[in-house]
Each structure stands twice: as structure tokens, then as C-alpha cells.
Length: 246
Ligand SMILES: Nc1nc2c(ncn2[C@@H]2O[C@H](COP(=O)(O)OP(=O)(O)OP(=O)(O)O)[C@@H](O)[C@H]2O)c(=O)[nH]1
Ligand SMILES: [Mg+2]
Image (tube, rainbow, N blue to C red; front, side, top):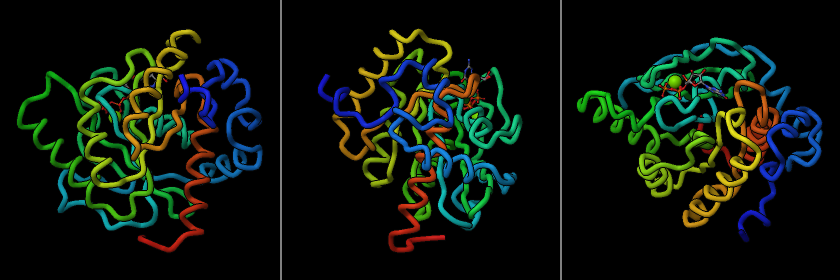
């Protein structure tokens, strides 16, 4: 409970009001200026910049990267489309296992978004699972321009054992990471509050993780302006600090 009362973010707000405040910035943990900075950061041109299926085929870094990880079908590709305001920049699918490589998208201001293959897809062939696991591990533990990884969690299901492995990798590699709940349009406000509390409690045991949780819906746009603002804030902090990569 303590974790929920000390949060600085929008998650105490019901999802409907999150959608309602889109762009307003009030009560979301981000100022109106930060929401606007996020909008501007994402408003430019976005384009497909390459795919990598192994460490050797990773493209050279063009600037800070923000990666989206999570179980298969959690909504990674859909969230990238929502953030960039494009319907089909990243390919989405009803069936799990759609994204099989690391997919890189270049946007304005040298910002790169990375769509990751999903994990925890029980029906995938063992050899494929091994290859994805290696790719995810190699990428997350050896990419200096990786500014943050958003670990997506379905708001209907919460954290699952399959998420542990990636949280371990991120903790060990000391990569900045944060949980984002997806598909919040599918749960009641009460269920969302319950899910947030459970995620917060679980993440409190992982001090390497950023202590906020963002609630989003790619379908109705809830939380999208906030996630853009969070990325813009991160971008600004990184620009202000010593140049590490890119
Ligand atoms: N209701 C609802 N459905 C969503 C949302 N985001 C994604 N979906 C649906 O969830 C399914 C999976 O979405 P994807 O974006 O392809 O998921 P992914 O995580 O990229 O999946 P993989 O590439 O297979 O790992 C699609 O049918 C989407 O339409 C959301 O916010 N709300
Ligand atoms: Mg995908």
C-alpha cells in the first residue's frame, strides 16, 4: 500500500479520466509543458530503419533508443503505432509471435524506437524460443545507446512468471526500465487499480526498476501523451548529462 501512496504518476487516476486529460497534463505527473514536449517529440516523421535477428545484424546506433519488451501479444507493436500516431508503422497481429526480429524505427531528433519479439509464447518452436531469448539478452545487455526499456504488461493479467527473466536481465545489465500496463480499455477501474497495486508491490522488490507504472491503451489513447512525455523527459535528461552513445 505504501508504494501506491508515494507514486508520482498518473496511475491513481481511472483510465477514463486518463483519456480525458490527454494533452492537458494536469494530475498526470507531467506538466502541460512536458506533455507538449512529448507531443512535439513524436509529431515528426517516423520510418522503418531495419530489423535484426542476431547480435551481428544490429544496426549501428543513430541516437538514444527506447525499447518495448513484453510477452507475446501484450501490445508492443500497437503501442509504438499509438505513440507515433501511425496506424501500421509496426506490424501487429491477433496471433502471438508476430514480431520476430528486433525492429528499429527512426524518428525526429535522432530518437529510435525498438519493437522487440515477444516472449512467453508457449506454442513457438523450442529452437525459435532459444534464438529469441539469445537475441533479447544480447541486445539488452550490450547496447550502450539503450536509454530505457518499457516492459509491457497486459492490464488484464498482470505480471507473469515469463516476465521475471527479462526483469532479471534488465536489473543485472543496469538498464533503466519501467512497467507499462497495456489494454487498459479492457479492464474496469477497480480491476486496473488492483493490477497496479500488485505490479507496484512486485516491482518494489526490484530496486533497479523505475518506480512508476504507466497505464495505457493503444485503442483509446489513454496514457499515450504521458508515455510520450516520459520519453521526452528522459531524452532531455540524457541530453543534459554526459554523452554516452549515439
Ligand atoms: N483492446 C486492446 N487491444 C489491443 C491494445 N493493444 C494491442 N491490442 C491488440 O492485441 C493484439 C496484439 O497486439 P500487438 O501489438 O501485435 O502485440 P505484440 O506485443 O506486438 O505481439 P508480438 O509481436 O506477437 O509479440 C492485437 O490484436 C491488437 O489489436 C489495446 O490497447 N487495447
Ligand atoms: Mg509485435
